[in-house]
Length: 194
Image 1 (spheres, rainbow, N blue to C red):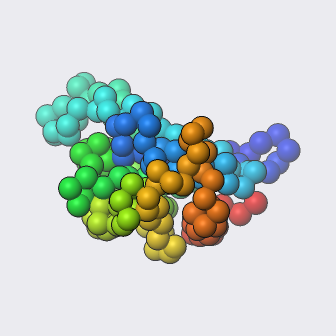
Image 2 (cartoon, rainbow, N blue to C red):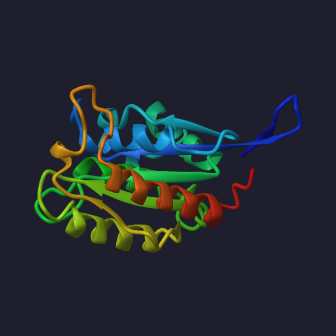
């Protein structure tokens, strides 16, 4: 999972997964903002390619037929010390994009890459609720995969369109403060000590 750099300091890997298919997703922008807040010995990578995942079916989840992007997703999660999932809310629930990704990542049952993986769920929305209903569903799904879900703080970025500037940089100080608390919680939760 982690490696040692030439100076001897352990480096950690945090994977960001956006549950949005939009190129201008506030959830993706939120992940990028968090990536800049992580400690210096933590490498952050944003996973790309979820929209090319076919819907999960066991018939194509074989060594011969499994899509390369599905294996790449599983390997990326398994290789990360912690994962941050930023998911918008569609129709009071999670998006098909993130649910499908979790379906792929949660196989084979009981021995998949999400078992005991420290995960911080977050959400951003233009609504005044910040995606809270969708994130509740996401947390339920992650509990079913036996993931090690960070309980506090819960991050719901409401009125997200007012929190970023035209360059997609997070500028709202209150949101920045909550994200810093969330990052500290994830670092502590996953044992990512400097």
